[in-house]
Length: 238
Image (cartoon, rainbow, N blue to C red):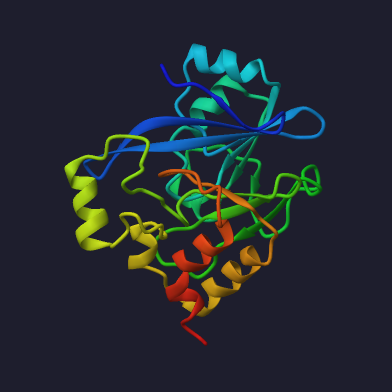
């Protein structure tokens, strides 16, 4: 791979962006690596892995936890498992049935694992029909870490957006220059009252920036961006 791990929060959070193809569209996704206080590495939404990337990850520390945070973010878990057989695997709820081939240690819930409870808060997005996701809040850096709950693609996108992506984001979902939840969320919010409870918990956290999987990072007015992105759910019961 010619892509490079970038240090996002000095000595704490690293990100790795890489190309993917989904629904005939060329996109990019993002893996997040968090170094826990004891030096262990926490791998969120793992990417494909080659020798160069593995060497760069190993230079940061020992991989101890592999996190599949959403039911659309699981494809490379087994690849990381093979490379790091001693690491524990945590799955988003429902993935244990969708990916019965993955050997896992834990199912993620609303309470952080005791070994990282001083580093993260977390919440499961309940009530949706199509997408499931677990959102994390890295306390010390005030960073929200999610996958599909917000996508941020527009004129300032750091990659070339293809015609199909532009069509769907502009003409169909009104997401171009307008960060929103992934189309699958918008098509299947499900029980909005239940979803709203999870979103309210996220908005109660004191976050300043957002790491997401698809699109540019959100480093300014993060709370305002998130509130607007989830407006249809948050205002459904006002």
